[in-house]
Length: 310
Image (cartoon, rainbow, N blue to C red):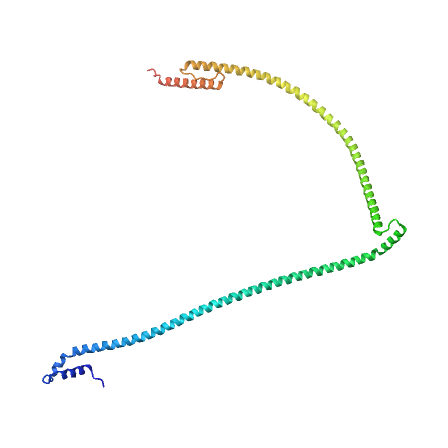
């Protein structure tokens, strides 16, 4: 059974004290509790320190374990990254192989389509050749009598040793006949056109003669009308000349009168304006200004004149 700290220190103190002083009255025990409490506190501190030390050791152990776990996790992370890289590379290689396989498949499909198109073209060409062969066979069967006829003609015409020579001669004769017929048709067409042109010329000549007679009559009428207008305009021209002479004479008189008035005005001015002798409008303008100034002066004099007394 554990002994309380206060009891333990009290017994130890009694053993160290002399016998005479061991008999301490009960009232002196009240002076030791602060020391005992201090020792108790110190023991508590020691126990707390031991607990902290134990917790520190536990913490260090846990920290080491966590550090080791962290290193393991980092190693696993690196391994996972390496696995990811390898898996990514594997995916890229797989995608590349898939792309190459798709391209090869597309190329194979394209080549197959080309071969199929070429096969269809060849089949169509074969069918066309077969139709051409059938047509030529029919033509050969149809021209067989002609070949026999040419053989008999060659026997009757020994100058043609070969059938192509006879055919060429026949073709030449046919072409010549066609050319002669074409020439004949052209000559007939030219003759008809010449006859039609002659008839048109005859009709046009008669119409031209009639038109010339009508135009001659119209021109004679226009000539008579022009003569009448000429006489009328000559009389008007003489009248205009006479009127112009009168107007010219009147204009000369007017200019002389304006010049005389301008000279009279210049006599009454200290600085007469220098105007050309032909400047009639300027002279009349100066006369007008002089008359206006004179009228104003007379009006001002009339206003300034005193009224006579009654």
